[in-house]
Amino acid sequence: MNVLTYKNYEGSAELDMDRMTCRGKILFIEDLVTYEAESPSELQAEFEAAVDDYIETCRQLNREPKKPLKGLFNVRVPPDLHKQLHIRSMLDQCTLNETVVKASQAWVSNKVVQNHQDK
Image 1 (tube, helix red, strand yellow):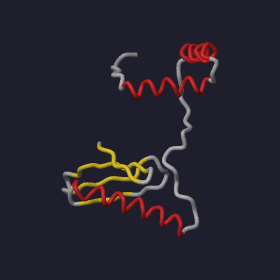
Image 2 (cartoon, helix red, strand yellow):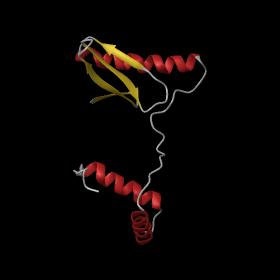
Image 3 (cartoon, rainbow, N blue to C red):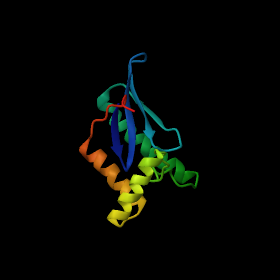
Image 4 (cartoon, helix red, strand yellow):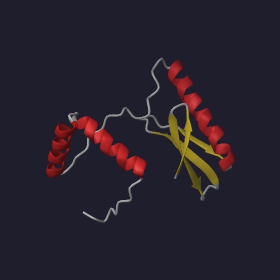
C-alpha cells in the first residue's frame, strides 16, 4: 500500500481491480473518510479534496477534526524485556518512556529487518 500525505493527514492509495478504480481512506482517525479516482494520477487530488472536505464538515458541525494519532499507545512486552528497559532507563538517567521512544526511533530509522517467524 502506498501512503499519500496532505495537511498532516495520511491516506491510503489502493487499486481496486474489480471496479477498475483507485481508492483510499484517511488513515489514523476514528472517522471514516474515503475517496476514489479513475487513475493514480488523480488520486492525490481526490485525497486532498477529501481532507479539505473533512476539515470543513467538522467546522460546520462545530467540532474539532480528529487528529491523526495522539502519540499514546499501550505496548505489551515480556516481563524480562520490561525489566531490561527499566534498567537501561536508570543507566541513561531518563524515563522509561524516553527509553522506549529512543528504541523505537532506532528501529524505524535503521529499518531493521526482523524475521517475524522467530519467537
